[in-house]
Amino acid sequence: MSELIEDRRSIRKFNTDKPVTREQLDKLLEAAMLSPSACNTRPWEFIAITKRETLDEIARIHPYARMCASATAAIVIVAIPQTEPLPSDFYPQDCGAATQNILLKAVSLGLGTCWCGVYPKEERIGDFRKLFDICDPKIPFCVIAIGTPDESPDRRGFFDKSKVTYVT
Image (tube, rainbow, N blue to C red; front, side, top):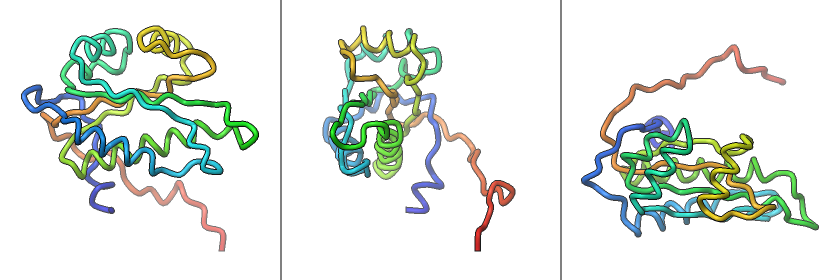
């Protein structure tokens, strides 16, 4: 597991000659659905995209998802805030956990990803609602560009002890 965490990178250039398969998408979605959620509410739905025109439209409407123009797939995570009577305010954490599972599973499959936020930006939420016909109260949470990496960015994260308080 440590190796997957250390090898994960945000990929912004993909090899368009190596498409993501349906089997790979299913494995990514299974990983997402295995993530923890408050009281197992699973406040999410997923839109798996391989249609070139739709990937290009995502690149057009989202200012930080331009890499979808070379990605061969994407997953939109749709949050479902209403999980009453169980806790309903934890969908950002739950959808974030599902996103991280997708990112790590992708590394294990030799794929690259880039996580691009949609929520909480109202304009992006509106654009994604329109593109995918997502009705209120559901919320487009994020889009993950997926493909075979065509770059190898350097590691950017690091352990910083100054960010830690130990309570012993």
